[in-house]
Image 1 (cartoon, chains in turn brown, blue):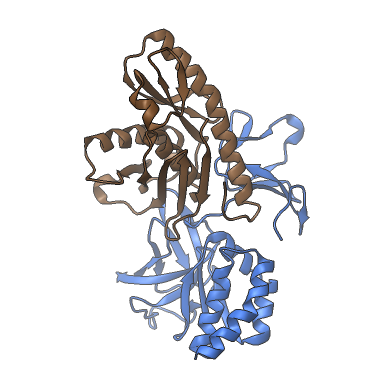
Image 2 (spheres, rainbow over the protein chains, first blue to last red):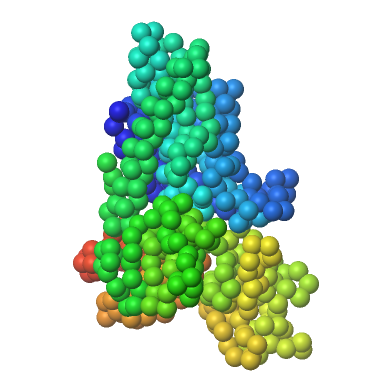
Length: 212
Length: 243
């Protein structure tokens, strides 16, 4: 598995932020909320969630909208939105460097930023990406080069308690046997990500400021 | 000063670091007199954490999660510093740094009556207590309680500076016997008002002294209390030289 690293409270003006990397893919997530909301987005009984993803180069287009919708779908299921009616919670993700793992890095950076901001949640969530090579091997957290050679890739996001699947994103052709094999491997790898979160939080609360 | 697991500081015991969803307690019949505070949720006989932070327990069996956060969520009976936005009817609309604006009636100030109402301009600062606040209504502030005793001090005098700190730092310096504040007081005479919404107002005789105090308190964001105490003399002498 590739190396995970994180620095919390990276942005001084955000309620919570996290600079997070898996291998050579780096994302910066910033969370603000629960705060003021436009009248058009006000819900009488819940907080309005928004996700905005900016790529490192070029304009934000349909591919970025896909990433935003996966992250929004995940975050909807864990944030306790009914505790803050008539407010909005914004998540902004800036892609700093991409080595193929943009989705899982962004999802994990979002989780760490939410933990840093103290937004009330049911549990943390962890994303793991894997790819299937033509020879039938499953590689967890592949690099861009390995992804180019692969037949299919799948990203799963798991919740922190029972490791249930919160969202899944898949590209390429996976038959059901390979799909379940990928799912099981990713589920095992997710435990490492959740342990990483716990370690980061323990360091934060022991008054230590930068993490690796 | 860093809270080590299992330590007991002033009757509050630090248990461990929790993440959202961690089970804190199972409720059985013999644990009937437990109270749960911020950051905890009771679901189907299990108490879970909803935020990441330090799980703490007071001597009166109150469990809560102490989170380092910046966003203020209003709670009743807390003292806050607010900025006057505008006046509507008989109320002022105040910004307290939360998702909703707070209201305060012009009659709930000291020496204010229907004949002699309190006049506030937009941009004035007030220090008051939150009367009511929950997720469904706008918070309401008062500067006087039901017995007509002064609560908070109404509008703040001119000449001070206001800045914002993370909430957990503000909670540290609310205690007037805090060792960092006592150290600063040996060098500079100052007046300090701390709001639970993270806003802090300082007034001293000279501008440079107020800036020094502001920088000392902002250092607590990035270092521990001991490290901050070591650095304040350096900050004070460097500020005195520049002006």
